[in-house]
Picture 1: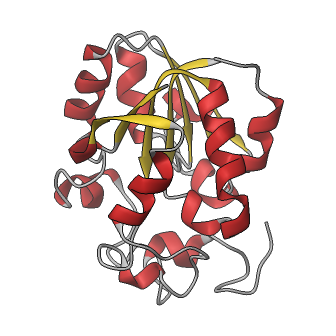
Picture 2: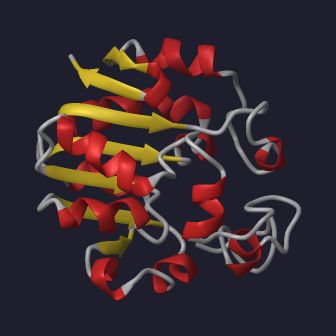
Length: 196
């Protein structure tokens, strides 16, 4: 995953350690994410309990980084799978979850069977794809998810430090309109959509 946006590669140590102008300014750790509050699935124990309350038994997270939420879901007996494009951050994952995380790009979703997971969680990924490919990926997410999807994309307002590297920079309203073509709104405060 080489690139010239910052550091030696996209989403490398500089990005996660707060050493670049974009990325996690306070560093990427369970503690710093939990301190950020209830903004997008960073209260891991509470969020895992919520996900399980939906009856979720199988879960895929694309853009899972260290798999902090997956760690908690495993405790509930959920079968988890995670993908991330950063070899650096996958190596930082706890041993309890590392074997469930693979170095994969979202394009590999095409290899998954229909209705593979009860919930497909796509975290901070869709903003980095080409705009003309967005409908393709949303249709693939819809194909692979049985029941629900969580779709979180940073926006220019909530993560302005990412604006220089994101390929799609739009408001939540714009994103929600696009999602609405493929999913039914379930709980926008939790970025939760139901498969149609």
